[in-house]
Image (cartoon, rainbow, N blue to C red; front, side, top):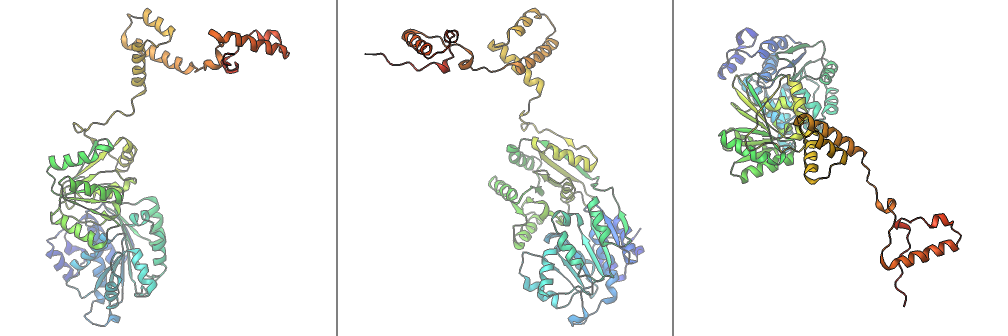
Length: 493
């Protein structure tokens, strides 16, 4: 199918041709006609499939009737609201709106936190039909009454799963309450959990479900590989991979903002130019880091999950998980930065012993077994020796130190000609049972005190004292444990 067959206008087709596109992607082919018809949509597609254009193009088509060149702000009320979780994604979506709407006299702007609000206020007050926003900054504007949502006809919630993960649900509910009851609702996400579907049931009305790929699936063009390595040697292995594979553009993921900063500093110190991008960086720093990375001025961009959502980097071949994400669905979003637009990609994960459970969860979500490759020189240290190996080492050490129980020693002599493996198993079993039954006994309470030397007289004297006090004779004749012997008195003058 061609774009001409989707019901798009001539102005939109010109913009599409300017980008060199002629055929829609599967999500675009399915979603565009349905949205143009005015239906609510719940769309699921993995990152890099043209998801953004699948809702910006039909949105522009529906708003064409309001296109005008009037300078009056009153002629340009906000008619479409696109809500996204991060600044980077907001910028990307707005770029898509501008790219495909460049031949239409429709106005748009983007608002997000981390920058001065004055320029955004001026842009909104000048009159716009399309607003791309992050929840927090949009609420700021609503509270300051710098914009209104009473004319909204199309509400689009993009990356709904990330919205949920980031705790934006209260903000979203508050925003929805300010929207007109009659409107078209579109919800798009790379993944759809049961929780997201519950949210959709509250927002969408008789939605058309569009899923062009299996839930939580990833592109078949991406090659997954895991390199086992100790946590303390991850940085060293990362350097080795970047240099050996001659990676000139690689996106590296960490779990935390502090971890991203630390890793970027360490890479720079090691001679590999890099920058970190995360929520604590201001917009100028984030924009500059991303621009340098896209222009290949720096080969490595270290990012957190939140900051990386919405990053659109053409022909990115490698994504490296320096640390696996706690949420397995974040893995899908991370590696979705590569293998885009029909190009091959590689998802490399450096996995320590402590992250094995996270890897199992990721494999369960993906429905595949990730290939494991051990890099020579970076083998895992055997921290958790198996029970049989541990018992064997104990047996060998006791044989050498001659500290085995007497019964096992006898059996060692009798079965000296037995098969080694079978015999060793028997001995290990007996050793375990013996060790369980052993009790540590303090001789202070179990062994009688044996007097030596000059203190014998003192012991007798103590016994006479006991007899005089009426202690029964049979008790006084028993040797007393050392704990109860009176301290020895110095020699009399």
